[in-house]
Image (cartoon, rainbow, N blue to C red):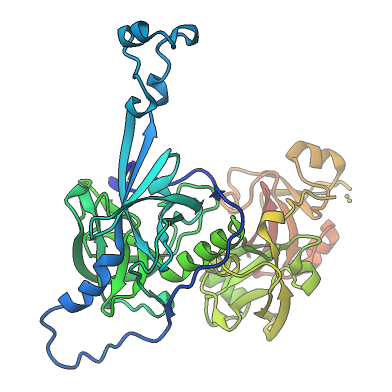
Length: 486
């Protein structure tokens, strides 16, 4: 397996992640028969456990080594094309006599069989940009493997080998994982052969780790102290009952080897991506059509909320499911289909795992009132990027040290503000203004204390002594700011 070392805050991240969102070599397929067990793990701990050997005897046959090779382009064409048919010249210039002799780079990873007819889960970074893939089972059998599809945004890939009645593993419900649950990482690290390491679930819902390089990637890792090393990528992280809880993908390390901080893609996320790749040849993700932000304690106070869990809508894009459903700026989304939303990233991940065309129920808070709103999701792959559509000018200090102007066409041109944005433009902020760290030239104040504002007169009516909630636009993003006016 090819490993890239990414240095982040003096740590090395072992993870070589892909470049394309989804690559498929065949058309749509029938879904395989897999086993998914959503019953809770037995945590009763009856009796003294002295060995997991019997359980692992059922696990290891379904874990495979994934070998890859890629022809080295830089050494293919030393000889000019017109002389490549001359055997003497080929030998003189060191050209190989046959394609089999071409110099290759080789990689090694792991995978797990999830259906008796040969579908295999692994990592995208294990098989990206390779020419050949083969799979070795624990019993010694070797199969050529086909890349069914890969998704670099989650680092999940699906392979297919031709076989019948192959050993398989059951997928567990990763939503039920708890910190402290015993887990085992199985794979082929450092080419030593199939290896099992034990640990616990160290943390759940690890996000914002930058382990996935692909822009717009989706991170929601299980963290474990079970040893994961180069070659383990793509292998399963199994629970104490031998069910797949995750797909091992990366480690954090200062040395390049395992120091007990490893990460696995949760089985529920891997299963959703896998099924979409098999069925459609691409990953189809739900699309809502809103810009969102996290609730910090100050924002929660302004919204009269007791908790900062949730995601606040900062923009509703036109002609989207959100607009059709009647969602509004300032709405706080607290749950999707009854499942709590903990943050902006959590909402994004939840929506991405829902099928386009499905009707969902969003629990929201609007002006302190709780309500449920049905929404029919669109397909993220079909989402249009909204660039908007139009709005006089007198210098005045609504806020000390801040020059605010009513919107004009010249201000739009100067600060590159879209035609759909309306409000008061921050033209200048003095060096000694108390708002210098919050308000920037070119920022547009679109709302004050939950009311739209387009004129300076409206601004004077809406601003109050004490804390004020501003709804602002800056450099392509809508956000909320809490400022104080004495």
